[in-house]
Image 1 (cartoon, rainbow, N blue to C red):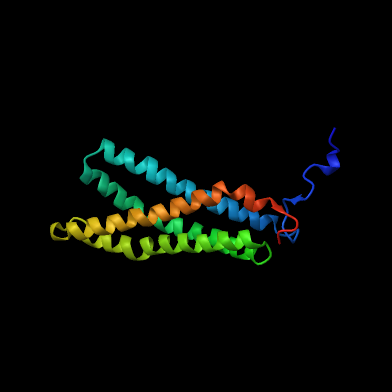
Image 2 (cartoon, rainbow, N blue to C red):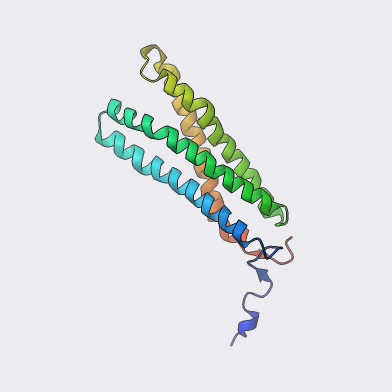
Length: 169
């Protein structure tokens, strides 16, 4: 029979400083909120709109929701990135890698929020701008895929990130 005192021997679920569990909680919560919201909007809300409404009506509704979606995603993404940065200062290579991936994700979200979406809103409904609108839409979809893909990777690897060996500092 295994001695309960030795279960998990060699592994630690805490970080270097005992004052850091709150920071891990902020990281997990903000990343989960960001990626969960993004996945719900991308895979749930938008398809429901465009499959059940005329494209012009669905587009008008999406245009109302997009500014909130993009800004909220950027804000929560920044929180996740800052918490990962703070954790990377004493948490080893894995936190550094998570921080770098989050930087790419936040840059993608920021570009969509601050550059692409405002331009799309400006030219929406202008017949002569349809090719440009479609180009911007394609870029937005690709950048959203970067955010979702990176977030899914980070969430899938969160157990490994959070439960690290004591000798892996």
